[in-house]
Image 1 (cartoon, helix red, strand yellow):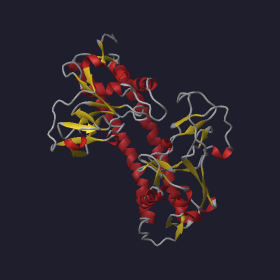
Image 2 (cartoon, rainbow, N blue to C red):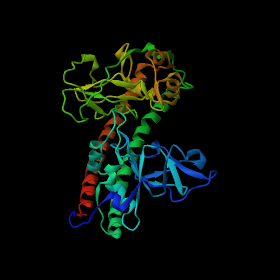
Image 3 (cartoon, rainbow, N blue to C red):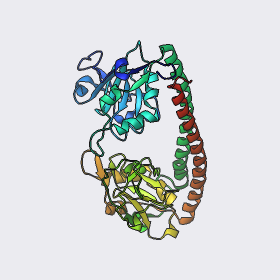
Length: 402
């Protein structure tokens, strides 16, 4: 019992990875949800595409509308890719990396369950129970099956879920405001410099090698230590620049026996480039505003080294590399390595030709970017406060204190 609430194992109040409630005909359309359709910041997973049943009946995970989808593979589970399926068709199919949980409708509300599973403590515990090798670790089904979950009456579950929904909606508005600030930077870039694909303002065109001397990378490490093991230094994961933002928390421990070269440390002011990632993410860039002093570069992330630092504004290059034109160029020049992974060489990046406005225009843009970053930093601090309040609300809700 938790503060008077009855408790049950999840497998006693829900079905795990169940079969479909109805079997479609081969020519019928079904909803389709790849892993990318589940947003860790959203409670609902809404299908954006459909496929014919005969195309997906083998090799994909089946589920029904209102089922709860739980990403089982790292890092998707730790990041909170857990959502309620909201489908335009009666049934759907998706990634094989989903666990599906179907609550017993007389005992457990799916919305209540989603909020329960998205708690940080549940995700941390699931991470500890993962099995498999590095990069392919997964949450086993028996972890979910044996979870203890409070099961108050359905009206009480609906009340709690409704409160958490409303609180989460406030966080969603804050995230939307932050996203608008991110979009503002690219809008400002296009307004000041024009589209790099057409160069409507007639800026000089040159290869990137004219202002980038080289790219510096680090080493790659496989570590047996846990993600949070205390070590002298940590090394970035590729996800540290995914989404064109620098995230030093996306790092792993480095053995203390390793003595890194000074050039392998990330520095304040660095512009980092992802030279290997999925086809959609290869070429992501991140501007380092501030970094802990013990963070190292891996071999898959490069630092831009400028020919003449006084004649280039990193914020300009950061935005240039986010433009559709540069992303397409990088995508065309990248080569596949294995599966959906892509890789690009220094020579191919340095050979890309694009516009280079005079330094005074770049600096003016950089000053605007700095103001936007300051506003964004304040907004992020406020968002973190809101996240902490939401986590406290979750904790109280599932202890019967709400």
